[in-house]
Amino acid sequence: MDARWQWPNDQPQRLLDAFRNRTNIHAFLITGAQGVGKRTLARLYAQTILCEAEPAARPCGACGSCVRFARGSHPDVRSIEPGGNRSNIISVDAVRACTDALQRQSYEGGAKIAVIIGADFMNVQAQNALLKTLEEPPGDCVFFLTAQRRMEILPTIRSRCAWVPLSPLSIGRAEHTLNLYGLSRSEAREAAEYSGGAMGVALRYPQEIKPVRLRVERALLMVRSAEGIVAAAKELQAIIDERADAERQLRWLLLLDILEFIARDGMDKSVDIDSAESNAATQSQPLLERISRASVRTRLGLLDAVSDARRRLSMHISGTVIIESLLFDWANMRRGSISSS
Ligand SMILES: [Zn+2]
Image 1 (cartoon, helix red, strand yellow):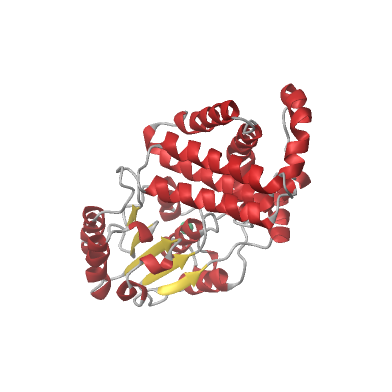
Image 2 (cartoon, helix red, strand yellow; image 1 turned 120 degrees about the horizontal axis):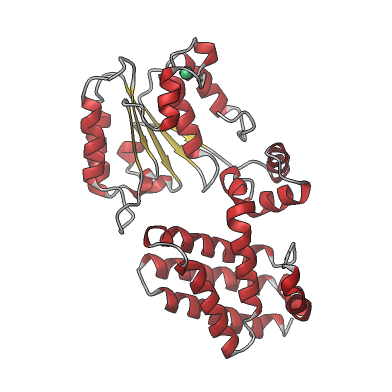
C-alpha cells in the first residue's frame, strides 16, 4: 500500500486493523464516487487478509502471498469487473465462474477472496446468482463489492454486506497529499479542484486528463458560428476516435466529465494554452471571461446539455449526433444568456 494515500476518515483504517486479525464478516460493499479509492481499499483489505506476516505487519508487501497478489497471480483471488463485452455489464456467466471457483479448496490453505469491481453493473440475473452464494458462502471466503450507485444493488445483497461508504478528501487535504506525490503547488491545486478531492482522479489528472481538458476548452472557443461548431465537433470527435474500440466508452465518459466540470466551474482558471496557440488565446480571451462570468441559469443549462448527452450515450445514439447537439445547445445558451447578462 502506498503510504502517501489518505482516507477521508478513520473507518478504513479501523477495518484494516480488524482484518489484520480477521473478522467474521463475509461480504463488504464499498461505495463512493469515481476515484475515491474503492478499488484501492478493496485490494488493500484483500491483501491484508491473505498476507503471511505477523498480524501487526499486514499487509507486508514482501511475503510470497503479497508478491503474488501484487502481480495479479494469487490463485485464491478472483476479480471481476464490467467491460470486455460491448454491453458494459457484469453477466451471470462471469459471476458464476467466480462463485464456482470459490467452491473449490483454497490453493494456499488460507482465505479465498472475490473482488467485484463495479458491482452496480451486474444485471439482475448476475445479482441473483451472487445472492445464492452470499446466502450460503463456501468456507472461509470474503467478498468485496465496489459500486458508485449503491441503490442499483438488490436490497437482499446490500443487507448481507457490511457497508463502507467512502467520500472524497477535502480540497485542501487532497492538495497536500498531491504535494506528497510530487506535484507542484499549482498542479496539485488544479488536480485537487478538478477531482473534487477524489484522489484516484486527481492522480490521473496531470498526465491523462489535463491534456484532454485543454483540447476541449480550445474546441469550445471555436463555437461562435455554424462553421465553428462543425470544427469544434470535429475536434471533440477526434478526442474519442483516437482510442481503440474497447476504450471509447471510457473516453466518452472523460469527455463528458470535463464538459461538466467546465460548466460547473467556468473556464476562469488555468486555461494554460501552449505558446503556439497564444495568439488565438489572446483573441478569444473576452469570450473566456464571458463564460467565466456566466449566469447560474447558463451553467445549469450547460449541465442539462451534458446530462442529456450522457443519457443519449447510454441509449447508443451516434456520437456525432450527441456532440453536435451538445455544441448547438451550448451555442444557443450562450447567445441567449451570456450576451444578455
Ligand atoms: Zn505479506
